Length: 283
Image (cartoon, rainbow, N blue to C red):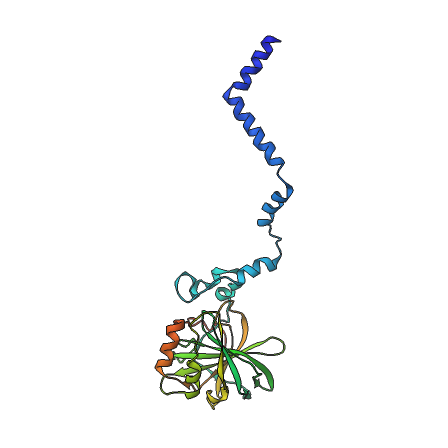
């Protein structure tokens, strides 16, 4: 017994035995971790995580027009933005090689005078109406949701870019999006637009109520001849299936108006996208 005890003592004190003993303690300790900690670790990499959790994160992925988050990288910033890279009906495009449709389209403006609200969302100046406005395309109604600006123009006409472009975003009762776009030339003063320009908000994410009422019919061209094609949103997530109407006649602004916008927002135009097999109707 005495010899046996001495032998056991030598084994316990041996460095190798201590190392093995420590490993056993660590392993035993891991097995008694609370279940909540183990499940929390697994859930972090669980592919069955509810889609709303991940999409909520992805929808807030930041994008920009410059740096590593510029338009050529939008599709890599979030899985929600993959259409920006993989889509085949993207906007904007160069308007060229148009053809006349079989039936002339009927386009009517129904824009009421309304108070306006402006917001600098960090990417553009967005303007919303209080009262309802709409356009009718072939007697199909699209309500105006908001309008905003890009400089230089996102669309080109026969290879020509314009100093600025205005997008009027509409939606029908089923959620289909129609964007009417107007090119802007820096060759004359537009008195009504100049009043709007005085209230351009420099601070981001803060809505400004403008103490004046404006009717878009006072600033839009009277000539409704236009081009039309099927494209996408020009900002992430670059959703396709958007009906585009590009008015042929431009609006008129001053260079000072454009410079003021650039000073606040910077240049915010997505590059021209491939036309692929789409056709452009001339109405």
